[in-house]
Length: 167
Ligand code: HEC
Ligand code: HEC
Ligand code: HEC
Ligand code: HEC
Image (cartoon, rainbow, N blue to C red; front, side, top):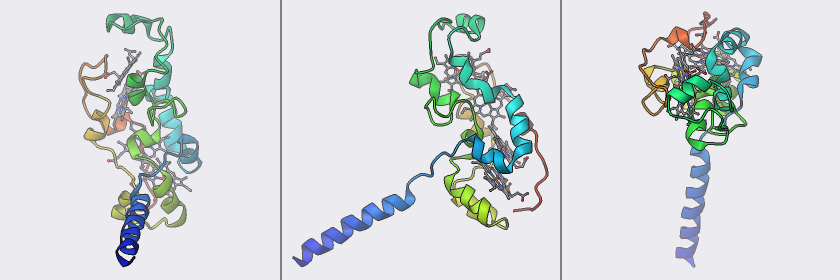
């Protein structure tokens, strides 16, 4: 009986801690936009914002043909393409939205809402990514049918604006 109770507790602990370390959820660009309108407006102008449209039939037909893809095919449900043309690999989060570079936002967003004095290591522990070259190369690599080369330039992601606080 005692042994059984201990095993139950171990199992419960494992479940609870698994829940605690589970990955944050994606919240979508509309949430980030509420507080980061300048970055949003700049990002919105770029092609990455509209990258889901690349997968539609007829889009970029010449480029697709040159890459050996079928220009008339609907790739919007093709899992291989969705991985780099959406945030979460699904059509409900189309395009290279904020969280494709900055990480899933549900946890760090809560911190941004409640504690403007957050420390950088605290907010990174909540999942915020300060994107570097490796972040971009998750998609900008030879697995893209259109890959030629990639030169990292953080200003190409969106225009940058000074923060009010140094974190
Ligand atoms: C989730 C995948 C993904 C990530 C991460 C990603 N990109 Fe892209 N990027 C794309 C796709 C897809 C396109 C093609 C969009 C098009 O041409 O329709 C693209 C296009 C671009 C372009 C050319 C079009 C434009 O808007 O100027 C630049 C420059 C670029 N990315 C820079 C970056 C940089 C810099 C990073 C990292 C800070 C990055 N990308 C991270 C998927 C990604
Ligand atoms: C590994 C990530 C990745 C995968 C997988 C991927 N793409 Fe892309 N796609 C990109 C990136 C990054 C670009 C920007 C060009 C480049 O540097 O490769 C891009 C560009 C494009 C473009 C614009 C090309 C142009 O010249 O205008 C189209 C269309 C496209 N992808 C369609 C697709 C389709 C269809 C699939 C699936 C068969 C696919 N992609 C799979 C990352 C990817
Ligand atoms: C393609 C990757 C990429 C996407 C998509 C992206 N960002 Fe960024 N973001 C970056 C990079 C790179 C930096 C600069 C990091 C550094 O300073 O080293 C940055 C910096 C920032 C900063 C700090 C202040 C500034 O302006 O530099 C904020 C805030 C921000 N992004 C918000 C957003 C929001 C909101 C979205 C969506 C509307 C978004 N980002 C989409 C790559 C991205
Ligand atoms: C309720 C408002 C709010 C929301 C929603 C929000 N943020 Fe923030 N975010 C902030 C504040 C406040 C700062 C600190 C800005 C400053 O100091 O100027 C910040 C800072 C940042 C930074 C810069 C961190 C640093 O110190 O370099 C990035 C990147 C960022 N946010 C991305 C995002 C992304 C991506 C989303 C959506 C998933 C998001 N934020 C949602 C309020 C918010």
